[in-house]
Amino acid sequence: MQNIYSAIHFIMRGGFMMYPLLLVSVLSMSLIIERLIFFSKMKDPGTAFMHTIKDLVHAGKTDDLRALLSAQRGPVADVLTIGVEHINADPVDINSAMEQRAMSVMPQLESNLWVLDTIITMAPLLGLLGTIIGMINAFQIFSTRGLNQPTAISGGVGEALIATATGLIVAVFTLLFYNYFNTKIRRITKDMEFAANEFEKIVKQQQQ
Image (tube, rainbow, N blue to C red; front, side, top):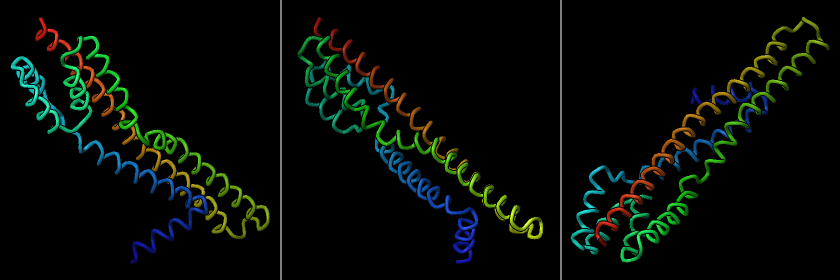
C-alpha cells in the first residue's frame, strides 16, 4: 500500500499533465502487449521448410503440402497456401497471387503501429507542456511572494521536471518496441518474398 501511495503522490506532484501522460503510457503498454502476443503466435518456418516444400511439390503430394502449410502459422505459410491453390497455373500468375496475398497481410502486421508512432511524438510534448505550466506556476509564486517561500517555488520547478521526465520515459520505452516491431515486419516481409520466389522456381522446375 505504501508503494501505491508513493506512486499517487508522485503523479500529483507532477501536476495535472501527468494524467494524460498516464493515459498515454497505459495505451502504449496495452498496444505493445497486443503486438507481442500477435507476433509470438507466428512460427518461423526455418531454412529447411522450403526444402520440404520442394520435395512435396516434386512428389506431387499436394494434400500433404496443404496439411504442412495448415500446421504452420504466419504470413509465409499464408502466402505459400495461395501458391498451392494456383499450383497448376502459370508461374507468373502464381507469383502474382502470392504477391497480392502478401500485400493483404501487411495491414495486419502494421496494425496499431501508427498509434505507437504518435505516442512517441506526443509523450515528450505533453511532458514539455507540463514543464511550461510548472514553470509558469513557479514564476507566478515568485512574482507574488518573492523569495519568502522557496519551497513553493521549487515545487513548481519540481512539477515541471517530473512531467518532462515522465514524457521522455514513455517515449523512449515506446520507441524501443516500435523499432522492434518494425524490424520484425521487415524480416517477415523478406521471408514472404523469398518464399514466393522460391515457390515460383519450384513450380517452374516441376512444369518443365
